[in-house]
Image (cartoon, rainbow, N blue to C red; front, top):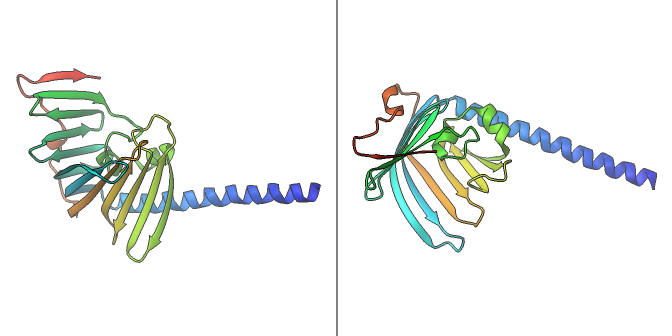
Amino acid sequence: MRTIAALMLAALSMTSLCARADDAVAVKRLSELLNQAQTITARFSQLTLDGSGTQLQETAGELALKRPGLFRWHTDEPQQQLLVSNGEKVWLYDPDLEQVTIQTLDKRLTHTPALLLSGDVSQIQENFEISHKEGGDVVDFTLKPKAKDSLFDSLRLSFRNGVVNDMQLIDTIGQRTNILFLNVKMNEKLDIKQFTFEVPEGTDVIEE
């Protein structure tokens, strides 16, 4: 019995070691891909589905980001919104409501996909369990938040030929948000002023 128990313990230990090794490989690969793009600009299309697959919302827009922590995520009309971060604060502006919400940047990277792409890899590793698979010119990463109060249950991030291609977020009730990135440009010089937000006169300000 002692021999069987010892073998089982050894097998469990090997499984744990292999899992950690796989995580380390995934983190290293994700770090390589994110680090090669210090800035990104792109168009995006975003589709949100409920747990049964019924379409809830479809939007499009533009993003710009500069690592680490600077981003601008603008959704086109008729559901226009603007999300901006200067690395310390996040502004969410709704021009239709004439309202802006200001928050301290959440270092757990759960605010927005743009923040994940613009984040520090060490922060990503600290807050997510990461696995990956590669096939041809596509690399898929699956990220599961370690915190129980995360805004989503899992996130898949895909790269094609070394360039970010798409992302899928699944929340705790099964709602899915699919984001496709288009016309992606990397490492172009960006105007740093676009990563701050001046509150328009007459806008209601909510600070959290």
